[in-house]
Image (cartoon, rainbow, N blue to C red):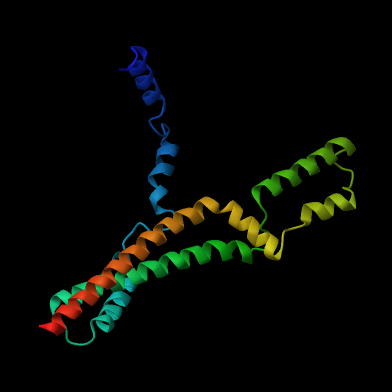
Length: 188
């Protein structure tokens, strides 16, 4: 049994957590699913649809009945979905790796604090010490940079992993269904 104040507290909490209230906040929230376009089916893209048709024809293996052609199209679409997700991950990681000016948000803030501290202590027109200038213009490189990118993009990479797991599962079941239909067609 709940206490008498519990329903009132639940109502008050619900009123405080109803999502964005401003026009800008609502506009941003409306675009959440469009960040990378992976929630849109591959067949909605005309180029991917043509690629799915070509791959489905190859998977169906020449003349096949309508059921096998449909199962081959499902398998081809699932294969293309996995490829789209992996390409999105590659783009996310290597766009940052290719950017010579890339630095983590925390590093940029720390460098800004050092510059402000030096400017405040020595005056805005006084040249910065050489060590401060070298620190401000330093950027991570190589494996260190890649590790920092992975850490900073963790939530996006986890989202891509969830998309990929679902796509791999769809691909596995589509291929199993296609194989089973082929087996049944050849046995009859």
